[in-house]
Amino acid sequence: MVANPSDGLSRACEFLGVTCDPDYLEACCGIMFETPRRSRDKVVWTPRIIRGVEIELRRYDFFDGYCFSN
Image (cartoon, rainbow, N blue to C red; front, side, top):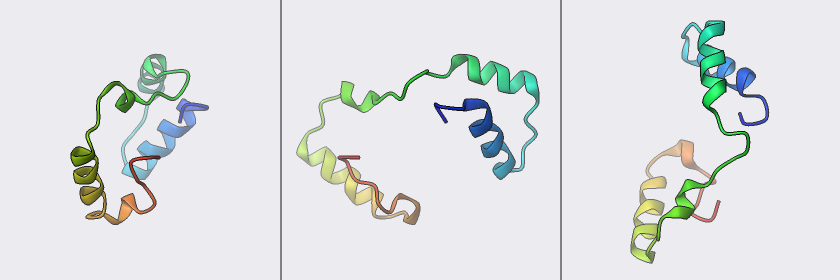
């Protein structure tokens, strides 16, 4: 998404079945970060909170392969 936001957003809209006009793409791409961000690094994560997040991740198949360290 970061490397080619227009393409990534177009594919996401197509997957969702929504129309993605050029003005929308331009507006969205204009506010995207140029490099990936890890905003979670701005928060202190206690071991208890990390365990809670990892428990929640296991509830959903689409999070398979994810863990706090990713």
